[in-house]
Amino acid sequence: MTDSTQSENPQQPKKISLADAVRNKLAQKKQAQSQSNKNFGPQENQVLKSQMTKKVNNQRRRTGGS
Image (cartoon, rainbow, N blue to C red; front, side, top):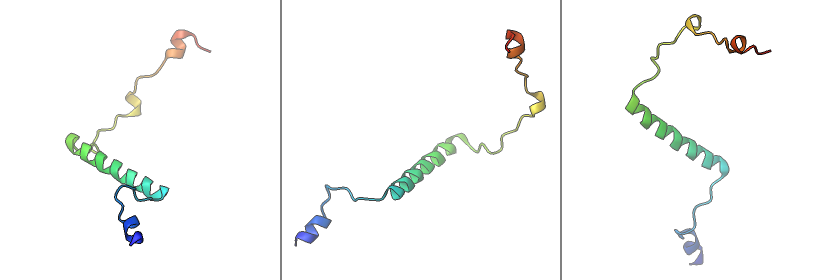
């Protein structure tokens, strides 16, 4: 009788390993991320900019840096 009351005690949380806790947290994070991405649409079809058209950073030349 005492064994069944200890296992059915709802006030004490079930002990889980650290690896299981990390897996659960990661699954929650992925689920939240997938739900937030549905609002913005797919971002995989982004047009990539060429490195040739990138503005050159000439701050060192302007400020006389070493």
